[in-house]
Length: 142
Image (cartoon, rainbow, N blue to C red; front, side, top):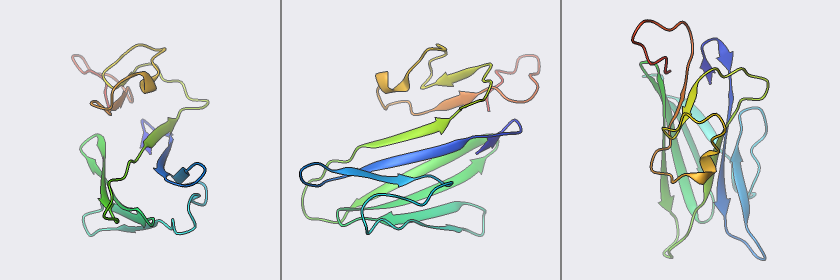
């Protein structure tokens, strides 16, 4: 993801069950995906420019759409249960800001610089970061 001329790596992890414990299926553009042996994400670009990623495991299938909407990057994940059982699924998304100067940001609507998003509910999964030059009356989000 690029914002204000700076690039940021976005990572996602999705749990999978197992004995004695499960693990994580990963999506990280810079690395080969890891996780279950059947986890083989494939990505295409639609005619409208939307990135479409599909991956599946023996318990669930993931379809991810990533697109630009004005100055926002929208990500939509759709999961399908591939079993006839109720399954649980954990997920984690990270934006790697290592070595970046972030003058202003909101994570889940919180402007606290020491905010750790894990402490909040998933009802507001947003990240706003100031970028570019601010104009009078502009919140500087993007």
